[in-house]
Length: 489
Image (cartoon, rainbow, N blue to C red; front, side):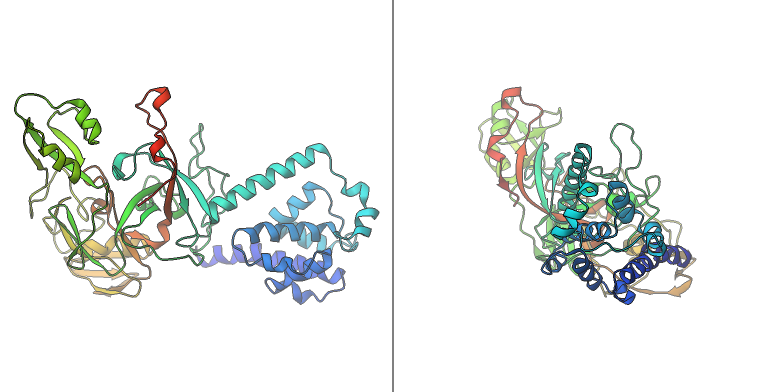
């Protein structure tokens, strides 16, 4: 947002509504300056409307405060004779037009506290609601309440891909907490209710990005910790052709393997953090190759051991525990994990930062890090306030975070790096970042491919499975009863 856009937004969202409230306060015998003091102005509106003083305490409860503030405003407008749903909606949605209009309108007068018994008796006919209006207000309230719950408290999420198997299965329905890490205020507030980024059926944008609010997160119960199963916005949707705002990027779910400031590496498919082997998730699985002595493996054994294959009888995905159990069968001749060799990159399956490079520095090609999905790093995860020295090896690792996520203009001229037009060889990060990986290590596009997840992309923490459906099962067996209300480890 440039200075002109900011000035226009400030006038529309702040100056004009405050001017209207100033004049309306004066009509009720209150000093106009009280209208420009946050929270206190709502307290004055409570007094003018005849509502109890303790309502002001509700303004400090995230999510609920929005509904309370709207209710106070509606009562306030009733005190000036604005009884119709159209007028009340205009006073809230188009406050920058109607509040100044009513404030300077000589016909608009303060009639008294709208919540008082005497006011209700005097204006009984005007306050009486039709059946249509009652249903309309009920629907609006339900939509607003549900939106606030999804935004600030808890939201349902469905597992669409096998990237987290066997910890989470395709068809698991989760509840995701916004409270644990602190709820984000909507950065793109003008959006269609219950649609994330695309309208169903018509496939158009479900939001308007003409108004964007700076990133802000409410205080949470904890920070993102290593081992947490986290829902976040997919960082790569910042790019063309989607160019989506942060909060409208697709929701992904992975496990946090590295926190800000950690040094992370993967050695033979084992994650190491700060030089120590990280705890493996209980449902982690990789691909194995096994051979039999001629007799094919009984399909029931695969089902019992939760072994998946993709059409190749001897090439399957399973946990370490399942591999150990399978090895004990007499007709299994050999079994070994399909782990890529160290220092041998896979040109057909490039990983970060070679998969999505932005700039080419110092030479006609990017450095050869010799990394692959099973042997990766070491790499330092950026931390807010950390200063990195930029050179031919580090710049490709952090260029995307500097330019795309932290909104800097980055240029490369020969051996020189220019950030916002200034030559530099260092950069200090403004945000914390995380390293996310799927538990199904050989079938997960995660940080190994596209790098760091910025803190402003974090949505919430997965809590528990409330429903689980198996699309491949018969109708009567479709529900996985054993997974219902199971916590996410």
